[in-house]
Length: 374
View 1 (cartoon, rainbow, N blue to C red):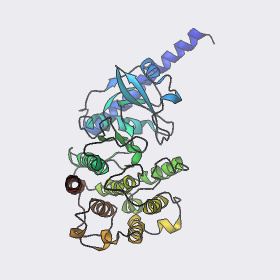
View 2: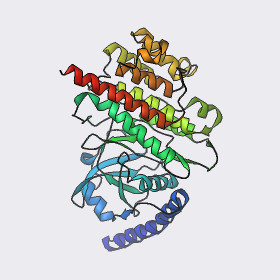
View 3: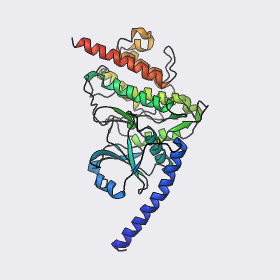
View 4: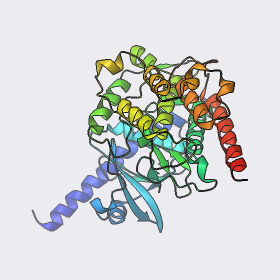
């Protein structure tokens, strides 16, 4: 086959992809947001190839990929994050990611979608550049000791927005460190909406049996990644796991596990810093085999509570909130435990409440930082 014929076949294939992929994207946009969304630019095949140097390994933005291969590139004279769907992804899942991303792109705590390329199969998505939190530095420097609490608060704000800003409730359903990004100013951005679900109006849950399969797939994908700053924990809500019913508590449970993952980042010296032995115990818990009977017999908060008691943080679990409120790390750990279902006082009703409590913890940390500097 000569070069010209190959080029013509490639052009026909890309044209067909644009038509077929565009139809699926449009269907998702109508289903998710009645077609009302921020503008989505369609980038060409040539633009994407040039921006990524033909998807060169040297342009990879992440050493670990679950659903996408991520690349750093330049488009329209600006740095961008280019996410190329893996063949394990269903086309509908990628299109759902595009639809939800386009809805929330105006909010500062979501990864901003710039456009996509319909000529590829699977699709290619283009975002403003940001780094996956497990691999990027925590960049906030003013004041220096508020970074991780600030990140948690910003992610809580994004989940609150998903749950309450639209006529229907949207559930992220697969929140983990691989869905959180940091931009150049250290602002946390939530992304990856492939598994995002919608609760019908007037209902409090939606039934979905695929979430457990996703977490099993995620675990298999992340095997052997310990040492790269990765939380290998299956973060599925026990109630969701047993019933298949996805609620706002599903995201809250995942968020609590994310808070515990934030604590485990060793390179950061701030008010959430813990002893190396305690960090090692938490890390060992988070990378236990997915089917370890000793682990799955009890809920996550049971194991975390045991570690806290062992390493001198018993008051986080056993004392009244007033006794830990003045200590940001203890208040942070207590809130994380409540998010993952530990019965410590008033139950959390929504991510709005979680975000409010994180703001109070952040203010407390700021006050301690100011007084310590005097």
